[in-house]
Length: 428
Image (cartoon, rainbow, N blue to C red; front, side):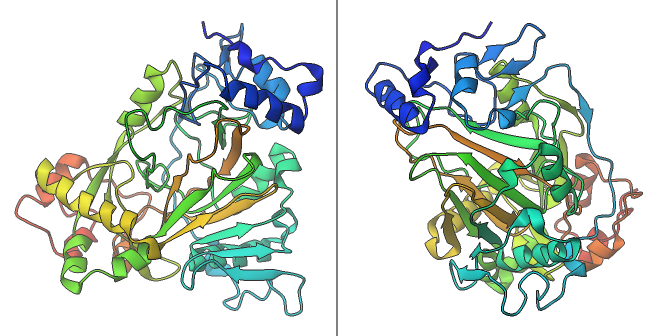
């Protein structure tokens, strides 16, 4: 049985922002250390188990929360199968190319670029009030800019059903295999970083984990929304990197080489980590999928690097060879500061990004005296990743997906031609 740590016990005069800050200052000066640096998994040393077997955060944490309806739960009995394959038609295809419905002339909005090619900050637009036509423009705008930071949003104050309806405009909502979700609403991914000292740096000098979300799925997310509920006064930002620009900086020879490669993505490690923590695995689905290392974006008509995320090995290569290429890509993105931006959070901030062209990493730089970092993610599913326009046009949900073994067979004599990669039945 999980225990409740007494440092979360709040007196009546502490159930305010000022009271919580004073309480956390006391925590920082005590011997207490949080042993959970995973913001998505249940953690027995901090959290609780209800009499019905549902895993939750502690009672004291609930009492301290400004948004208890958004707190995570983990129900071991709630099981899902994966979303069936489907033809995703991106809403960006229906946008006004000039974005005039989203940003009308003389409108009361303000747009600032975070970098010349990547990222924008928008004020004066309320996401919850957008029409369907405006949402279509939004899908194109997010694809074009990669990351868009919206200030002063009220999604967090809407009902969870209303927020789900907003997200479903962009595609079916993903259900995560292990993360917590508000009770009765498994379509939300909740990131709940508990207060207290961090152990992130006890065994590592950096907690950066560049990734695109749940790439082990057959059809990973596209346009994604991440909103802050509670957070520190400063820090706890999200770093983003532009993988279209990262690809375009490579030499044509290396671009062609990488474009022919396929990477195995696996859900196994994430599931095993969750179960080892006493948490859950709520989905039964294909634990491995093979995706192109360089991905074609159907709306933009551009290519981006789609690694490493949950990738394990490049098809046709030995492990050391695969690791060498993946390490180069990781270093290329991590060290090129001019590919990156840092999205900061203020009360009401919602960050939208395109998982097909942006890698991201949470930043654990906030102090232990700060409050929890409590956020929600709306995660619409997009198309099956493909390497070219031809492959995009040839893919169908009725196609029988190649197994890892069939991909290995396809690559046994080297990188196959693009016409073979675009043919879903070439090894049948």
